[in-house]
Amino acid sequence: MRFIAAVLVLLFQIENLPPPYPRDGTTKLLENDRVIVWDVSWLQQAYPVHRHVYDYAGVYYTNGDRIIVSERGARSRTTSVAWDTFFFRRGVTHSEEGASDDPLRGVFLEFKEPAALGVVDTETNTLAFASTAGKNVRESERVVIWEFVPAPDTASSPHRHTRDAVVVAFTKLKPRVSFVPHGTVHADEQTAGADRAYVFELK
Image (cartoon, rainbow, N blue to C red; front, side):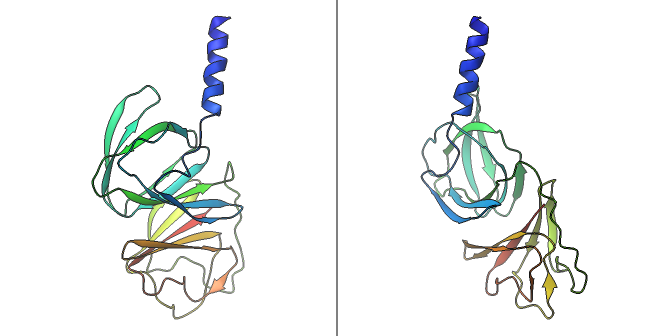
């Protein structure tokens, strides 16, 4: 009985952990029915233990260090590099501490649905995204991430987004974010003038 009670207490504690955001150093950039997009900085402080309740992906846009503390208390210093992308499944539980004078920064997308929706626009009259100028840098069961360096200017011909997409453009390390619904036909990603851009196609 004591073992069962201990397990129930542990499960209660895990289920009632706070989400990772909002917290000091974060700004919400966008939210709709599919995603929440955060601009995240790891300040030189200890953050509370938290649980990632959504699958999440993103891109770091500065170099920086942080200390990740596991559920068992193991401390691991981690260095992340600007323009690395990532995808993680929900359920990650840990705490973090910023560990560099210039904080690590990244844009994080949290996927609200527990699984891919599989919504794809099948119209064939317009050339489909992605542009040949983009580079597919990561793909998972939830997202395809395209990198554009430099960011695309006005395209010469229209293209169609077959999937919902989040566009993240960086100008002098300042991100701006927009959401493009599937089926959208346009000639550019509204990223003209940016240094680089990332398009996250949502599955």
